[in-house]
Image 1 (cartoon, rainbow, N blue to C red):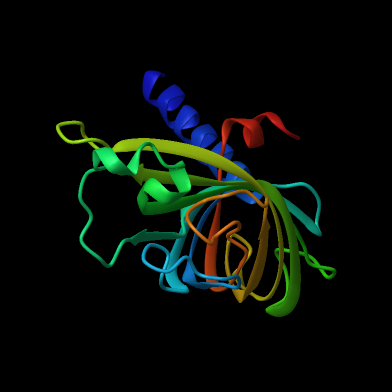
Image 2: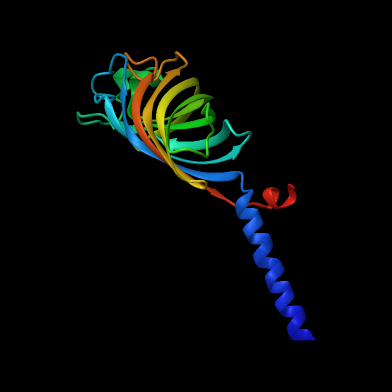
Length: 218
């Protein structure tokens, strides 16, 4: 009798897992690519336009045509290409934009995706995206002798628009390749650089996975 109950429970568990996989709406996202700044560079610090991009995220299917996702990423690090020393007494205490000698950026976005014929069926189709979020800017600033460099952080409100080609490999796994255009808030970052607007070519992969929320849904 105990063996029968154990066998029945095992079949029930496998059946529940299969159903969860069938109705899965949550997914993981990995995105990589190359982006380029569109504005004026800052000279000695932000002196390269092109940087590698990497985003990690989670998302949820809202309907057959819409997805919503949240991501955190790395979009560039720049350092001064000239030797940097401590502040000298005759320099006083200049603004942070002048003292900065290294800058790093991390995009944090909530993004919506739309595919007219469905996000999980057919093979090749266009996909549009729009996102709101922030670009976190971390700066390292020159300091007075005997003091370590000062680290500061600021959040630039940002809007993102994207268009890509969606490749549906299976119901639970797909990829895309396309362009993203990001517009950031205008604020002083380093000398001669007041925004981090950029355009990037990215390749993304997402895989749908079961979750407790999926199990609770009919």
